[in-house]
Image (cartoon, rainbow, N blue to C red; front, side):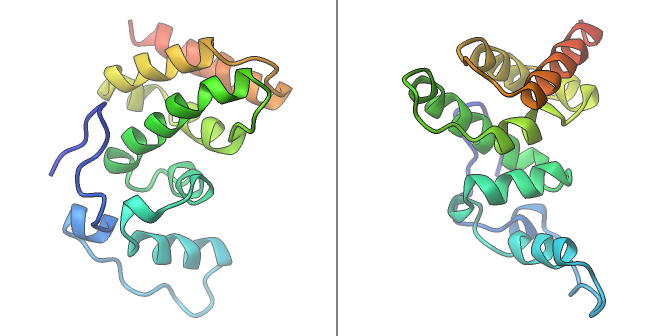
Length: 142
């Protein structure tokens, strides 16, 4: 299976299946975040909500598979934001803060993210900071 700008294949598979590596159960004293990440890895990626994707991407889990899916969601929902509709800033911020190494490895996704952010308006100051860092990361990779 592979991921592409057209979206990931294997939407009916979990990260454990796609990566061929099942994580052990988290320790009983693990934080809620750790327990949630472990549980989300076992769900088919096509069933993950934007919030769940943001949580996994923010923890740098499954980027190979989840970034194309998240970028597609962001791209698809950007026109709605310009019309005053809901836009998931948390997912956008998680994607934007993946770091320059991620964008060097996935330049086609970086290009799509860049197109998407150019179409967005009225971003929060926090999201604007993430956009600025993303653009800085892109310049470093050129």
